[in-house]
Amino acid sequence: MKLDELIKYIEENIDEGDFIEIHIGRAFVEGYLVIFEKGYIKLKTEKFGDVEFNLEEIYEDLLEFVHIKDGERKVIEFY
Image 1 (cartoon, rainbow, N blue to C red):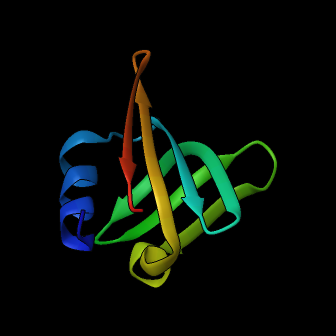
Image 2: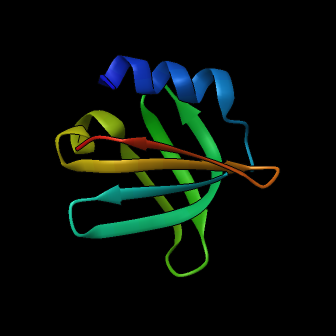
Image 3: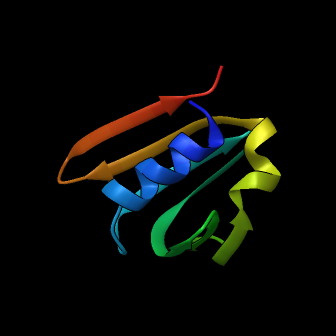
């Protein structure tokens, strides 16, 4: 999936408060979506508090983007 397709997926399918997991290289971040705007994403996590980043900056290292809502788990793989 290309970056613009991922951004479109998030805009169309993920709502504030939905749970997401992001696997970046050897790092893993999970939390609830606080805000998403044009590639900028902010999550509320239990371990780290608020975590924010730009998808464009991490896209090359992105392994998986996981969206969990109503017990359904959607995994987008980048490998």
